[in-house]
Image (cartoon, rainbow, N blue to C red; front, side, top):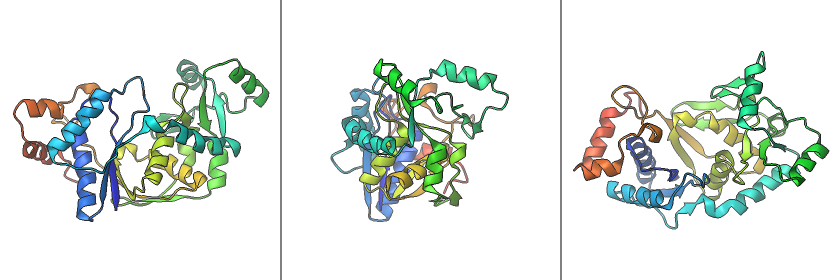
Length: 283
C-alpha cells in the first residue's frame, strides 16, 4: 500500500493538517507500505519555499518519516502539459476566455443556472465558441484557461464508479462537476489534473483526504479513464473541527503546529488534541 500527504505550502500546518498526515501515515505503516510527502505548489503566487520547509519541520516533529525525494508539483509542469495535450488532441477540451466576473454575471442572470454539490457550475459561455474565433483570441495573446468538455468526456469514459473504504462503492456523476478547469490562465495545470497524474505516477494505491474533496473524486475518476491511469482506493475522512464546530482552515488563522510547539506542547499533546476534536463517527 502507498499513501501520501499532499499539502499546499501557502501557510504553516494546523491541527487539521496534522490529522490528515497522521491518518495517511498510519494507514501505510499498518499495512507495511509506503508513505509519501508531496508538495502541491502549483499556485505559484501563494506558495513559498519557507512554508515547504515548515511543513517538513512540523511533520518531522510529529515523528513522521517519508520517502525521498519529495515531489514538488511546480517542477513538473511539462509533464502535466503533455497529458493535457493528449486530451486536447482528442477534442475533449476547449479554451475559456471568461473572467470570474463574467461567469458570475452569467450565473446570476440565468433563470436555471446549473449547480453541483460545490455550487454553481460553469455556464458554458465559451463552450460553443467557433474554433476560428478562439484561435484568433489565442493568437492575440488573450489570457485563457483550458476546460474539460465534460459532455464528451463522460460519453467517452462511460459509466464509472470509485470505492471509498468508509462509504462503499459510489457511482460517478460527471454532469454534477461541469466543465472543470484543467489548466489555469496563469498556470499550465490545475489541482484536478496534477493530483490525478501524480497519484498514478507515484503508484498511490490508497488516497486519504478530507470529505470536502469527495466530490472532486468524480472528476478524478473521469480523468483516470480518459488518460488510461489506474484507479486507487479512496478514504474520505470527516474534517477536524474546533470547539464551535468550525473546520480548521488557514484562512481563519487556525492555531499552527509551530505555535503549539513554541508554546510548549509536545507531539503527544497534539495527538491528544486531535483525539479530542475528532468526530465521533470517524473511522
